Length: 104
Image (tube, rainbow, N blue to C red; front, side, top):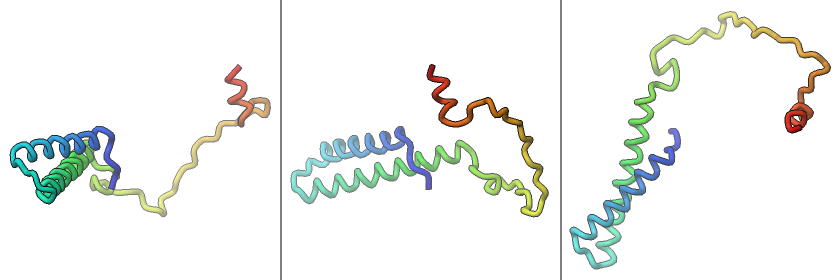
């Protein structure tokens, strides 16, 4: 399961805080147990909101793989053409020297 983005975590956190404040204001709960139950309900609701936003964003983006989309994959026995190789001149720096040369 992919991790929620920062926006999705903020949405879930806001839901927890807003629900807790609303439930405490409406219920008038004063006991420790009653407040703990209301906070637990708000936390569960925030978790559900985050998970629902996570699932709706992944379905809106489309399927992640071709198998999920129903398109067939190439079989492992299919020939694969190699990528063209570009020759590198020995005078061109390739490692850390290249990064150092760009800094000048």
